[in-house]
Length: 268
Image 1 (tube, rainbow, N blue to C red):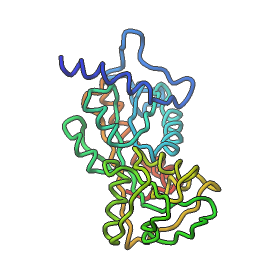
Image 2 (image 1 turned 45 degrees about the vertical axis):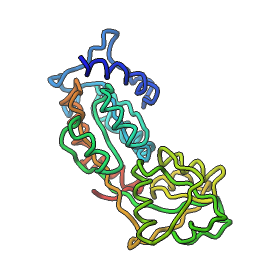
Image 3 (image 1 turned 90 degrees about the vertical axis):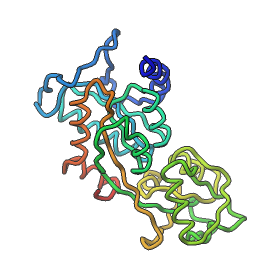
């Protein structure tokens, strides 16, 4: 009964975040019925037909929209909706019983905190950090050490956010102390702040690539960098277990990997 109460309480939060990939992307019927794990195969025979809700890290926003379109074309009868946010917020929703089918986070630590709510994890991609600055890099930021300049307005993600945790690791490794102007709840918020007001920030390489002409990018050498791993897992409470597992499995296929790597993600 507690599980049902938590699920109802979390449903509204997820509904506000879910972004349909296409106008045709529907949900379950008015009685809340969904295909169960024994759902019939789609017309392509590749995956059970289902309406899937995927909770995914904010840094996957652009690439997963492309991946989702591809998956739906390959599997007529399957519809995919995404809810993008900071990984820590997504895990909190899962723990509250949010009605979702798949979870993809930007680090294994955050996914591990939901071990009792998800099935086996599969790392589907990796990523690295970069420094982003105002367009033209007017403050001539060239390295992590430059971020310690008290005259700079630096924005980071909060330590509870995967990218914020990674940033804290690399800064500590280089003995650099930064007093951020703000600590954001996800990587896209950091990027937006640098585009509009802050002097610099630390984001994933793939996020910087989504803002050409809006920010400048400063590479962090591999010897000073951190590697972000993206695990995916089906949610145990999903009423569409087979379809959820099929989507997680597909994320490791050559076609899905090609989409991820074209967006700048590294092989898992």
